[in-house]
Length: 302
Image (cartoon, rainbow, N blue to C red; front, side, top):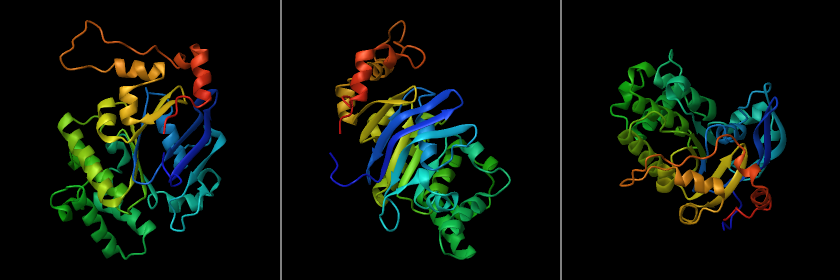
């Protein structure tokens, strides 16, 4: 159990897109310096929850119908409900206090601006520096993420870089203003295994150096085992289980969590057919007694 109040606390968040409930009473918290992994199949509400933190859900078609998102990472340390803040205040939070790495760097980076222009824009927005100083901050940010010859890279365009290098650019942009919390949404999607390991190792190093908290959204349970402190399991827009990473792998309590772990391929074990999790979001609802335990908090271990 953490003694200090959480850096970020999501309470009973519900987000709808028309008749579709993308987040259904989601509650979770992230403490200073920890890595919280959020796992689940596609459509389980992981990215919607992260984007809600930064106020990035377009309304319409989206609609936040209930919930609070309390943030304690500002300079004054006071708790504020991010869902209740005006857009002008949220612009001061995004990038400076909470930053996000999106799933696909090629579509997240602007193809008609140089890497330097895109990083310095964020620095100039959030820090009281001159354009020359902002360029120095951008150069240092690229160097921090392991980019060789950062001064030259500032003048390149996204299409001139490999997928792994573009992901490093995204991380540099996210961390240039030294945020307290990083939302990493599938940060290693479409990268080969070697580059994945480099990117995740880089994030761990920067986190340790800066004392930053990370919310890691991923499908890869191997990544979770190696990088997370605690794990939130989601399905159908709901949180089903919360546990420390060692507890979760040693003693998964929810049937859906057990299904996810059973579906992982294992070296030296070659079954004719891999186990699968039943399709759709009906597993937790089909087991009424189990769902009641979820609502009572019996699958939340801290």
